[in-house]
Length: 77
Figure (tube, rainbow, N blue to C red):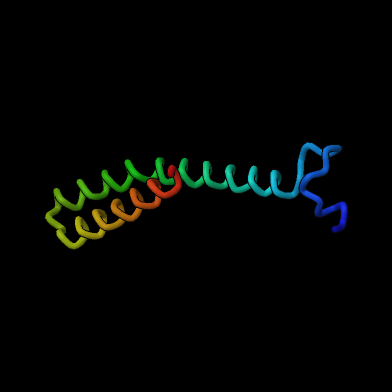
């Protein structure tokens, strides 16, 4: 096995696996933050559509919230 791909090298604290894991964790946290920021906006949009009795818009916003919550649940698992 090539030393560059030896994930058990003790002379390097950062292995390719740990670098990838850190990048994935950062990307996950970024996505969670983005979704958490979008959630209140979607709720406001839903309320606006409800006030204007745009039931199609209410349903769209509700579906988007459901999808957002499902994605958040998966990312937080």
